[in-house]
Image (tube, rainbow, N blue to C red; front, side, top):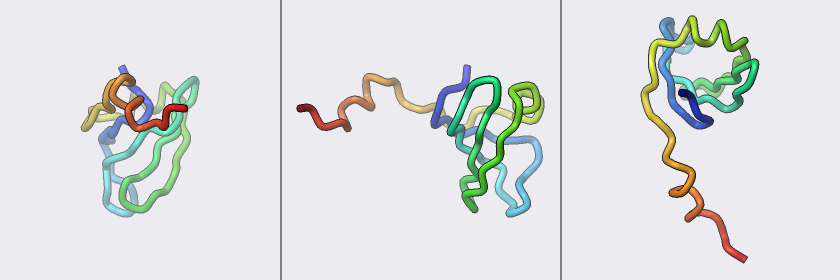
Length: 72
């Protein structure tokens, strides 16, 4: 459902006025980063799913990102 690097929108905006966040850690807890000011917030999965409005941008498939790596 959610992937690392996804851009999500939250129901309430951050203090800086932005409501778009990037998911940078997933598990029992979620760590998200504000795309305007760079502030990082960590919250439980339950709180995250309660506060999320929707997914703005999905990250590309893993096969596409492998092209950016240097092959040895």
